[in-house]
Length: 60
Image 1 (cartoon, helix red, strand yellow):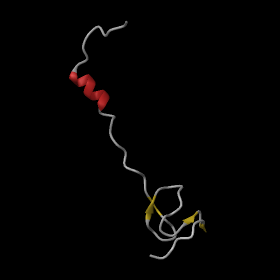
Image 2: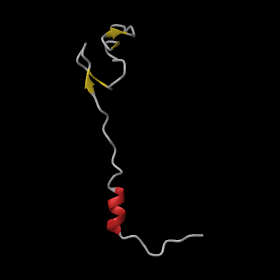
Image 3: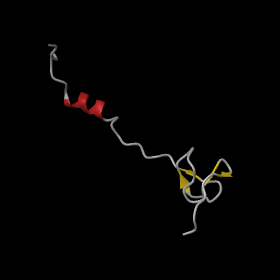
Image 4: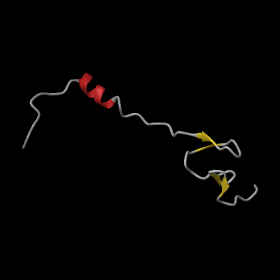
C-alpha cells in the first residue's frame, strides 16, 4: 500500500485548509415587496416570481 514519503508541514496543511470557509448565501431584493430573498426563487413574503404572482400568500 502506498505511504507518504515525508510528513506535510503545518504551513502546507494550513494553506490547503484555508479554502474551507462557509459561503454566505447570496440575497437579492424582491422587486415587488423589497424584502431580501434567494435569487431564482419565489418570494416568501408576497409570492411573486418574475413579475407574476405564483403563490397566494395569506395575510398575517
